[in-house]
Length: 144
Ligand code: HEM
Image (tube, rainbow, N blue to C red):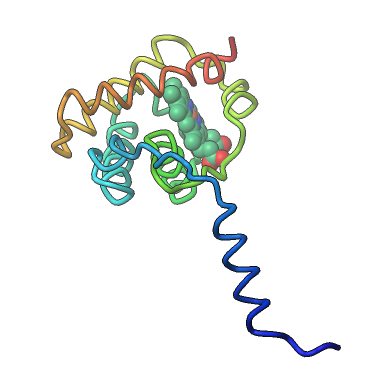
């Protein structure tokens, strides 16, 4: 094997560094406004308590793996808000299709999410910005 020449290594590093195209800084404002991942995790925890107490939807959640749901929903909301998380749960459409979720149930869950954010001191404007992104998932959750 030929000896490694330090100047060649430096040249390669300099060229590859120069090749990196400047990318726009990702907009993580909403993620920050929600209190980063720990703030979002708190909201999801509160949401879980609210779901358990809500007779409109709690039957759907019987036998839930709480830890896994908490982690996946937190990651999903974090990613949706522009944070550095990657959702690694199941695909939304097939997962929710078998539950035959109604609009009333969808609205009940949204109501609980708003209340969970409220209880965690998230400002109304910030809540609405998250809801605006979440609505994109409506057709998948309702299997439309
Ligand atoms: C925008 C609305 C919704 C979003 C973003 C959402 C998101 C999620 C996510 C991320 C998971 C975890 C997936 C995984 O662990 O692989 C999940 C699971 C679940 N969702 Fe939703 N969901 C929504 C609406 C609803 C509604 C309205 C209901 C019922 C009222 C519902 C019932 C469930 C249940 C029961 C599970 C657990 C399924 C299981 O573990 O077998 N979801 N959802």
